[in-house]
Image (cartoon, rainbow, N blue to C red):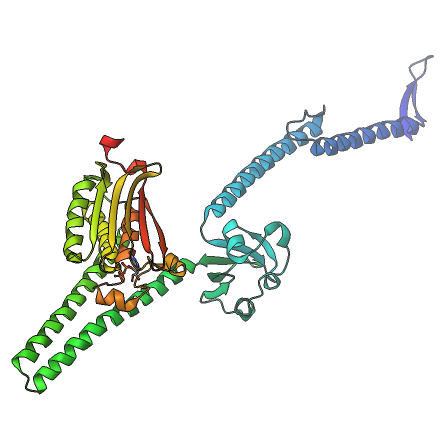
Length: 419
Ligand code: ADP
């Protein structure tokens, strides 16, 4: 109800009169309410649209609210874009890591892992996400470690053909990170080192025992000048054997510790082979016929290393070829590159040994190797020298018929006048 002041037409009297206009106000209120609702509806629609969509027309307080909302939205979009960029960067960095990273929730369900972890643990993120890690990796050692709750030390465990070191690190309240590190190669290197030391000690122990025995005998008993002379000769032989062994071990260790490629001096191969063939003839002492066919092809590389590799191949050919046999050395350009062949018609090698010949101390016939002054390291040295000169060794052999050791140097390894 509303009161109005009414002025009479007849005079200046005025009086108060009330009039019922509630319909008009209700209508205004409804319009106002509708406009508010409409604005809210507009906001809702606008918020659902992609960023940058035109703003609906608004007025008064609503315009102000839209301004604030738009600022918040822009800020939100910016943060999202930044987050997405960080996430992409994080994933890229993680995928480049050689170590594996696995994120699990508080009860060990797989949330995420990088490619290295997939490789180390045989996981597949698409397939395994959300699954229990201890169901995916069932190695008892691994399961015990994960359930033990004691993660102060990493756990080494064998997974397939790999040896993996895993360490669990708690992060956030309800998440944990499992870091994996593949130590298969370190393990292999350790085993090789241990074997090498065991073999080397064994190889050195034999001549030392012989020398010791002679010395004790010489000190404890009288002996004729002739026996003494004979024993001294045998001791000298054993001492030389030890010397050769130590020299080969040092050469091999030095070659293995060098990380960079061999030097790139020009090495004139033909004169080098001429000299090595002369040495082989001296070793053969007329028991073999030795021939050389060499082209004037020179290499880039380290003279001493190449000399030691080629000398080993030639001396093997002489030592493993019985008297009356032939050794041929052929050097020159072939289709694959510069090629050296050392061919003999000696005792040959059965097929099952061929793959292992370049291993340290691997011998097919131990007695023959020792009696011909072998150390068991010659072909290991050859392999390392060739590796450092980007060359390949191919061995073909037939038992009791003979062998061919073929070395191929890439064209890039030729000295410039052949380029
Ligand atoms: P070693 O000092 O015993 O000769 P190497 O490493 O040079 O050691 O050779 C490894 C083994 O390979 C030898 O013990 C021998 O059994 C075999 N071998 C190498 N060259 C020949 C060859 N030309 N003919 C037959 N057997 C060979």
